[in-house]
Amino acid sequence: MSQKTEVEKLKEELLTERKNGASKVDAETLQKADDFCEDYKAFLNRAKTEREAVAAAVQLAEQAGFTPFDLQRQYQPGDKVYLVNREKAAVFAVIGQKRSREGVRIAVAHIDSPRVDLKPNPLYEANDLAFFKTHYYGGIKKYQWAAIPLSLHGKVMRKDGSSVTVRLGEEAGEPCFCITDLLPHLATEQMNKTVRKAFTGEDLNILIGSRPFRADSGSDLVKLNIMRLLHEKYGIVEQDFLSAELELVPAFPAVDIGFDRSMIGAYGHDDRVCAYPALMAAIDAKVPECTSVVILADKEEVGSDGNTGMNSSFLRYFIADLAMQDGMEARHVLSRSTCLSADVNAAFDPNYASAYEVNNSCHLNGGVVVTKYTGSGGKSGTSDASAEFAGRVRCMLDNAQVLWQTGELGKVDMGGGGTVAMFVANLNVDVIDVGVPVLSMHAPFEVVSKLDVYMAYRAFAAFFEAQGFNA
Ligand code: MN
Ligand code: MN
View 1 (tube, helix red, strand yellow):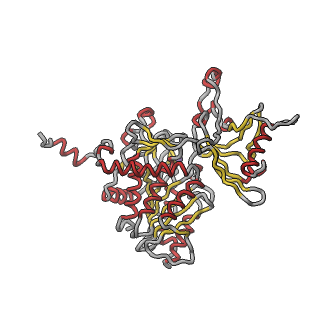
View 2: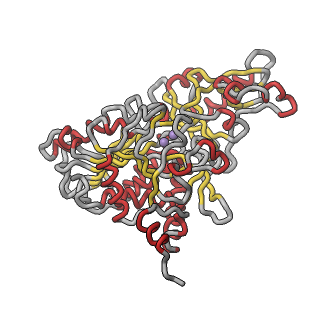
View 3: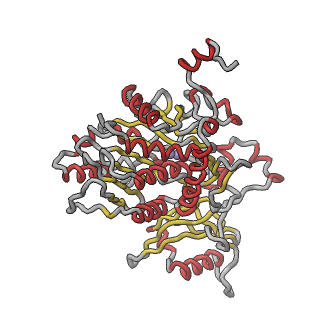
């Protein structure tokens, strides 16, 4: 009875096995995944913005012996360093046995997420209510941001050059903020519009107060009262909003999803769900063969431009500094380097099956997803990894028994999106996207599988540990 038929044998030999990854791994691996994700959830709750992610990552790294990169110091294999870029991006490196001579191994993830930013002149009053005007950041479906609790995060520079850090609406008992929505009873006109027209950027106004400053007469007294409270709490005046980066994000914490607790629902999985595993892989790296580099980048959600994005020279300069220590040129180090662009992909959602091509989509619990190219409209705006490099990555993952799958971002010509892969590839580095499948990507509440998160960590660790990979 247990004899395999000819068909079964041939299938096993020739075809790709398709089944839920959670039934392919043992109970111990699932337990490890669950444990890893407890720490990941704690990281998510601390790191809701790029600045907070950098601060949290640096703290974890320092606890593991990383020290600020010092150009004057000669580093030895096993040394762990980090370099922060304007509080919003950072690079972490573990010096390898071969130092930078055979190139470095780079895992790059981004730590900015779609959100709602304050405008430079945000505060106003309308009909006895006070609001903030906003300009959304990244690709959002605007209606998803109405009628949910929001918290305020960021930094304000005062006129005297001093600064204040803002984080309000996260702790129990703290006030939150929100964008109001129209009641269904009066929404006949709104409901007849397309979603794009029913919710516009200028509608995303944040409700922040309703009580006026007590006075005998005067206008804008609700606004005045809010500014009085802000001055009391943060020592700021209205003009200080111009020199501020204040961001509104969902106020709720990361939670387990499902009766089986197999998933995590949270704001900002994209792309902290790759950033955290990549950072942990660097933290756990002993003395790798090649210097291992983790970059936590900003500005990916708006195209990676700007001095904290991956289209800046930040990485190139850091590699140049490493190369100099080894008497090499940056271009030679980069040309021998390899990179995993660690970003999420869209997990197949049976509720929206028509947007996906099932055979080339990634699935929850399928493990880390290797994405050969992203882009849109006929592979535009992407780095298409070569067959050779895809082959090396595939073998590396198999050798380390990492559960992995492949996937494109939805159906051809359905839309599309990019990652930072092309910016690193443009430096003459071999790059492929490796990340975690996500449901409801870019929503205020995204969902990932715990097993996939853990497999991302295993994939980055395998990449740093592999021997002879930068061939
Ligand atoms: Mn992303
Ligand atoms: Mn994104």
